[in-house]
Length: 314
Image (cartoon, rainbow, N blue to C red; front, side):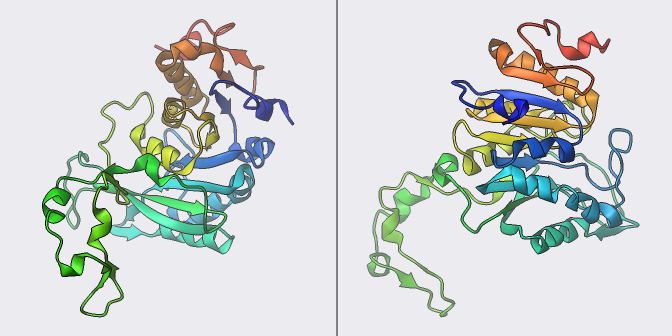
């Protein structure tokens, strides 16, 4: 086993490893290691000052260059969650997102479900033919039809409606009652008696982050945290191959998982390192930042100062 992958083995505590570089060259060292890859890749033609910009018509083919390393780094029952949003080109919605998902399916990925991240606080604005963007996709893909899932980990209170609805059960509520229009749908209300929690919907209402944390597209920690709890085991490995400012790492450590963060932008790796060292100051010796020009550096032994400050950042 190589040095980087061995970092996560046989450890009594959860760890986060931050690697600066191209995940296509890094991930082969982590074959069959992860329960979950959860990430938000750079969107097409977006944030040109921060990432290499990929035109929407070339995005699907570009993203497919990551297919094999993503596939290989996941366990057989692992999952891939992609948070992404399409864009408007010349006043028309470009469907590069769906083309990307279709091409991944052609390569063997199974589309388990589509989630919607509902943003209740989108930025205001005006557009002649459309309204404000208040949501984004989160696609759940897997290598098999029955990937690991822990639905109880994200269950929600059933709600007060049951008290009134189940107080007096009618004749049709004592057993499965099929729809009268023969649609094939049915229900058995009596099975809800005594239940305190139910499954959430696949629409996740999570506000946008107020501060950008030095990164142009920070997603809220609650977003990766939801999928981490749902689609991974405790103490397993979570990978974010487009890690940005490190929100996935924080979500993973908060939920007793290990995390591998990869980004090809050195400054973002430094920001992620600084956020993790600040938020997890009691775990200094559990967070390691590696960059191509230097060997591993342990926060507790060698990085007394946040790494961004060592590079002269304010």
